[in-house]
Amino acid sequence: QLQLVESGGGLVQPGGSLRLSCAVYGFSLGNYAIGWFRQAPGKEREGVSCIGASGGSTKYADSAKGRFTISRDIAKNMVYLQMNSLKPEDTAVYYCAALSSDTYGSWYCNVHFEYEYGYWGQGTQVTVSS
Image (cartoon, rainbow, N blue to C red; front, top):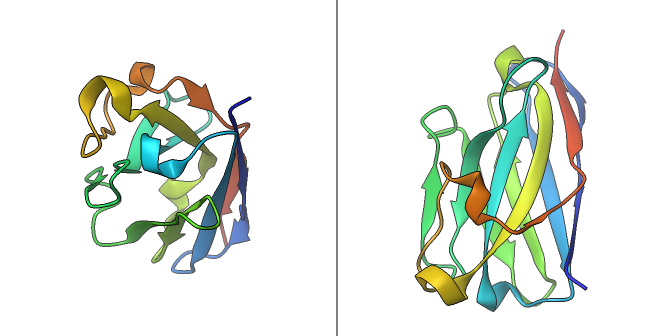
């Protein structure tokens, strides 16, 4: 059974940092792209970053570029989202999701088409506030 579990959220002051973790169970990161998405209160869910199954391709939403970094440890089946210079507008529930490489290949991932991701975690709350 494929499962994703996020952790690492919390309350942080503006300008601070957090590292989110996504633990995956029941599948290999070598066969799935992983995306990070977020949903703020009253807003639609949006993509933040993703990493392809090959590990060699990453993408970022404009809001995340230069501040967030996605990485993974395939041996530990973990994907991370390092978030620096956090802003109040980064406050949201953050989700990780998995997309099989069977359809689009091992270099593919996207931050725009969440419907392509078939498996989702339960989310972790990030609150940026002074």
